[in-house]
Amino acid sequence: MIFNQIQEELIKKEFSHLSSNYLNSAYFGPTPYRAKQKVANALFKELDPSFFQYSNWIGIPDRIRTKISQLFNLSQHCISLGTSTTDFVSGIAQHFPINEKLNVVSFEGEYPSNVLPWLVAAKNRPKLHFELINRPEKNNEEFNIDWLEKNLPKNTHILNMSLVQFDTGRRICLTELKDFLQKNNIFFILDTTQSLGAEKLSQEELSIVDVMVCSTYKWMLGPYGQAFAYFSPKAQSIIPRYTGSWIVSTNSKDVSHLTNYTTKSLPGARVYDRGQSPNMLANACLEASLELFEEIGLESIQKHNHYLRDYFLLEFPKEKFELVTPEIKKYQSSILAIKSKSADPIKLENELKHRNIDVSVREGKLRLSFHLFNTKKQIDELLEALDFNHE
Image 1: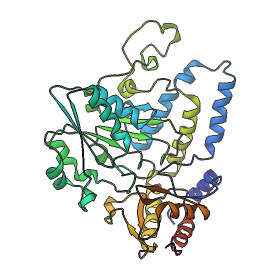
Image 2: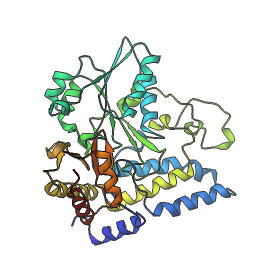
Image 3: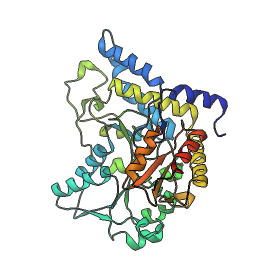
C-alpha cells in the first residue's frame, strides 16, 4: 500500500462520484468532489456580486499562481496563467525574436499543440523555419545525447516537445539532455500536460527548461480551458510581452487610476497572462485540485501510479498484447500503451466499455492511464477483461 489510511479515505471521498473504472486521465481528468462546493460559492458571487470586493476578485490569479508555485517549488514570478498549451506556444511562436533565421524543431507524432502553432507562425514569419523529425522510438532507439547529436538538425534554435508522449507514454529523461541543450544554446519548450500531477519533476530537471507548459484538465484534474506556464528568467529576458491585458498593469490594483494608461506591468511572467485571468468559476475548480495535490503530495501520487503500472506490466497477457511503451523504467510514466496482436483496437475499446472500463485508443494503440484514484482491484478487473478471447 502506497497511500496511508488518511490519504486513502480522502481519495475515496473526493472521487466516489466516478461511475466507471476510469483509466483515462490522459484524455480528461476527473475533478475532485470538493470542486463542486467551490464552484457553487463562485457561482453565487456571479449570481449576486453585491458588495464583492474588487481586491478579492482581482487577487484570484495570484492566489492560484502562489498555489502552483508552492506545489512545484517554482518562483511565483515565473508562473503565467492561460487557457491552453496552444495559446502559450502560439504566443511564443509569433513573437520570439528573429535575427537572420529561427530554426525550430519538433517531432513527427507530437501532440498538435506543439506543432500547429509553429506551422501557422512559419506562414506569417518568413525567417522562421519549422521542421518535424522522426521520433527515436520509430527505430527502437533511446532518446539521449548520442541520438540528438546524430539526428537533431544543426543550428537548431528551439526544441519543442512533450515530457510524456500522449500516445505511447514514453517519458524523456531530462537530465540526459542537459549538457547537449546547454552546449548548443537550444531554447527548450516542454509540454508537461501528460505528466504534471502524475509525475514529479526535480529541481535539476526543471533547471533545463526555458518554458514549461501544462494544460490542467488532464492529470492536474482541473477544468478545461485553464493552463499555466513556467517562464524561466532567461525566457522572460528574451520573449517580449505580447498581450495588452489591463489586469497585469501596475494601475490595475486601484480602480481609480485605470485610465492612467501605462505599459508598465506587475513583475515577472504575469505579462504573458491571458485576458480575464480572474475567471471565478474556472479558477475555483482549479483551486480545488491544487489543494488536493498539496494535501496528498506529488511524490506519493507518483509512487502510487507507478506501483499500479508495474503491477499491470507484470500481469498483463503478453501472448495477446505487445507493449508499445519503452520497457526501460526511466522512459516510462503513468501512461502505458499496448497493442493487441489480433483484435481491432476500437472493438477492444468498446468491449471494455461494456465492462464499465474507460480507456482510450490513440494511433491504433490501447492507452491506459493510472492515477491516484485508481486501485489494484481496478487493475485486476482490467487484466481479467483483457484476457478474454478477443480474436
